[in-house]
Every structure is written in C-alpha cells, then in structure tokens.
Amino acid sequence: MGDIVTPLQPLLGAVEAGGTNIVCAVGSASGEVVDRVEFPTGAPAETLERAVDYFAGHEIAALGLGWFGPIEMRPSHARYGVIGPTPKEGWEGINVLGPFGALGTPVGLATDVAAAALGEGEWGASRGLRSHVYVTVGTGIGGAAVVDGEALAGLGHPEMGHVPVERARGDDFASVCPYHGGCLEGLASGSAVAARWGSPAESLGESEAAAAAALVTGYLAQGLRAIVYTLAPERIVVGGGVTALPGFHSRLRDEVAVSLARYPGLSEHLAKDFVVAPGLGDLAGVIGALVIARRTSEDPRLR
Image (cartoon, rainbow, N blue to C red; front, side):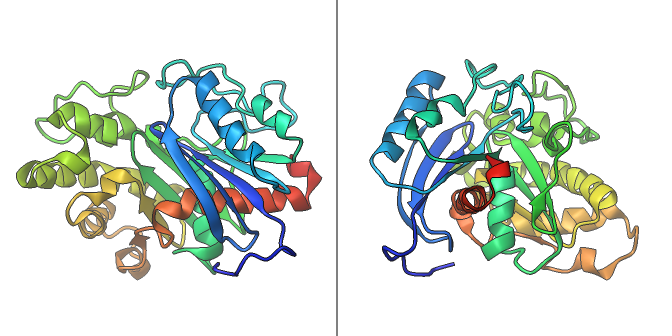
C-alpha cells in the first residue's frame, strides 16, 4: 500500500456501506485512496443515487462494493445483490447492484466486513497470514473469515454476530436484535450500547464507558471463542466504532483468555498479536473494496 497513483495505473472505485454511513472512494490497485466522501446511510433510493453520482464524476476501471448484509452473494442466484431480512428500515429486498449498472463498469460485491477482512489481509494487520478473521463491532456485529486470500462463503455469508451467547449475571436487557433474544449483536453491538446507556459508545462518560467496555468485551469474548473453536484462525482483527471504548482491545484479550479456559492450550491464543486492532484503521473496508475492484477487473467471473 502507498504507491503513487500515475496515469499508467487505472483508478478503481470502492464503496464501504455500513448501517450508519457509506464511504465512496477512488484509489489504485495498490491500495492508495486518492479521494473519498462519506454520508449517512439513508433511504435506499437517495443513498444509492448519491453513490452512483459520485462515481459518475470519476473514470474508473472497476468498482468494488462492500455492503452491509444479509445480502445474496451468489452471482448465479436470481436475487444476487439483494438485501435480505435486515433491521435497517427500508432496505430489505433492495438490489444494491442495479443502480451501479448505469456506470458501465465491472462491479464486484462482498459484505462490508469481508471487504475489511480482505483489506487487512493484503495490507493490514493480517498481512502474510494464511487464515484470519475480521470482526466489526459497530451499529451491528459482523464477521468474515479469509483463507488463502479468499473470503469464506457458502449458501450465504457468515453471520458471526448472531451466534448465541450466555447472558452475564443480572443482565435482563431485552436485546436489540429483532430475530434473536440472546445473540452477540443483540446484546453487545453499538446499537445495544446506545439502547442500554441512552448514548452512543463514543459519547459515554468515563464510568459508563468503562462499564460498557467490560460488558461488551465479555460478550464478545464468547463470540471469539466460538470463532476460535470453529475456524482456528491465525489472527482475529476487531474493528468498528465500539472498539474506541477505553482499553477495549486489552480487555478483550484478557476476556478471551478467560473464555477459552486454557483449551486447546495454544500459547498463540494468549499472545498480544492474536486479537488486534485493524492495521488500516477506519480505511480497512474502503481499501478492501479496492481489492475487490482490482480482482473484478482481472477476473470477469467475479462480476
């Protein structure tokens, strides 16, 4: 990452679409972001139109989309690019690919968290590893696993944020997930923090922020334990707005050690570089979308 963009290096487009904000950017195949804009994720029609209009003003060779889910990821499926059941009002059933067809450029699609995972694998905290997982703790909680440079997917994409967790003693919070009463996202996401304390994580006072960090990392450690036991990744990168809570990653590493309870007994699970912050910071998803755009321009089967 960091190569200087020249006229000989075609520009690529990137979209990181989360439940709260959308980032549109233009950059190079080497991961250099040269221009970007950010705006709220509002109603589908106006949001998609704003994104398309941004790219209409740039000459790009391909476009990579990292979009919030659940979303149909199979190119052969009739509903490819269509968002499934989601708490994001108005977005269920929306085909996010359709409007970008007006640009006349190849478009590749992944989930927003898969894009971040790909970005971290190419140029971030997981560079050089064969297997790693990226988990985002923001408005919701999502996760993606990458093995040999490819994001894992099957009938759908992984829904790591909806794994069940055991409630902390005395926690009778109702859950913000409309589908599960006791899943990770319902109890520990940014939406859950805001509902519990009446303010977003970044706006909490010192004592409330400390309490939120303790609760969230305790629940998240259970989710990471399930990931460790199921996928055995070499590293887990945890990003998202909630990770700005005080001492978040240090607390989380300690909680993961407690949750694993010395099983399977690997020293790597206790190392400081096993659960880490994103190496690319807030740009992980955007840079990952550039990876998707580059691969799409090189391989028509990914379009």
